[in-house]
Length: 339
Image (cartoon, rainbow, N blue to C red):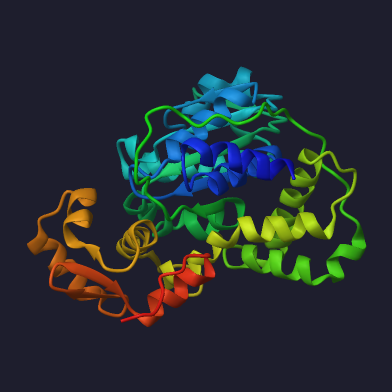
């Protein structure tokens, strides 16, 4: 498959970034809004920089609240390209952060944005571009805990959890074969009755309501099939996309909720711990995690005391529990036998 060639091309120079690149590419071709969530230094910028260079037109932007959108109204009306915001953590206030994510999620989904009254009134129409955002877990927690999560963000944004740090960082961005915007393939009704569709849709249902999961999964499949040069989506396309989107399941382990329409929280520490296990394997040294997060060993041991359900510290090494091994096995990460 062509998407496998993209993955292999990335893996030659940037091991373990291939799947992330593929999912970002498919989401861009599907005109979706996708957020890459991973600790600093995991390759998020490398992936989006590659797609910025390959998909034209493209635009990189700083924070973009609804008021700030007025500066882009002429360019974004009728826009059919790629829009990337590389680091949501660079936004200076929590209010602006939540406003930016909400605004971009709504723009990608409704294809319009505007303010009808006031000195900064404006209107953006016929936006049919795609949006890729990069964020660290601790920053994403602020969005999840906001009221805008349930009302705007949750159903309109696809979240991709990247679990790997580069073992040998490369400064340059990965290279992939030339790509261009494609016409989405037809989705035959008979595919809705297949096991491949049920499994794919289930991945999206970990993040979205049933109707939105169906919509996002279908449009991503249509985009992948179009990229492969097919006129119709096939079961093989569904199976490949299901495999690529398995990191979406991570949300089931990272989210908690107290109330029906609010009170949601995001366990950013747990995601960072799982990234360490996926990157370095069972029994990684404490000093590795201290280095990655700029922590003293004493403070790290204190933090890990709250995560004995997931990790066991023996001497100067960290080992996974049975629960952690099982969680990561769903993502295709094999840590061997638990402690």
